[in-house]
Image 1 (cartoon, rainbow, N blue to C red):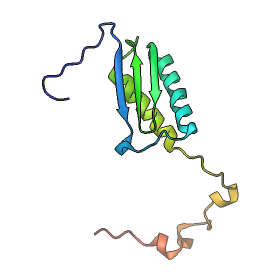
Image 2: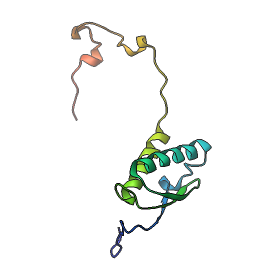
Image 3: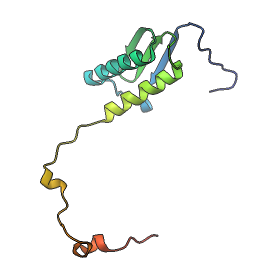
Image 4: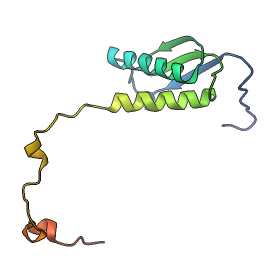
Length: 124
């Protein structure tokens, strides 16, 4: 935080918060991403107990107008919100592999390992 600025939490004031996406990329341009953000915002609101007066989701940034939280502070709320949204936006479900493909192609003792796996690692 720049010198001379002070945070004033716990005074029962509203907090106007603006957050930009990574490198101002339009990460909220799809309806899926916007709906996901709104869903996570509701979960965080329920957990931290703050009043959500208003919000705007733009393609590359968000605006929030929130009240004082019952738990934590506005910085914690924004940190948790950004982490959860980021994780869920980056998560892509993996295809389930058949159980046969999960096994190693060889079974038995270490003597039977292919040469590349049996060789010691070289450190540079």
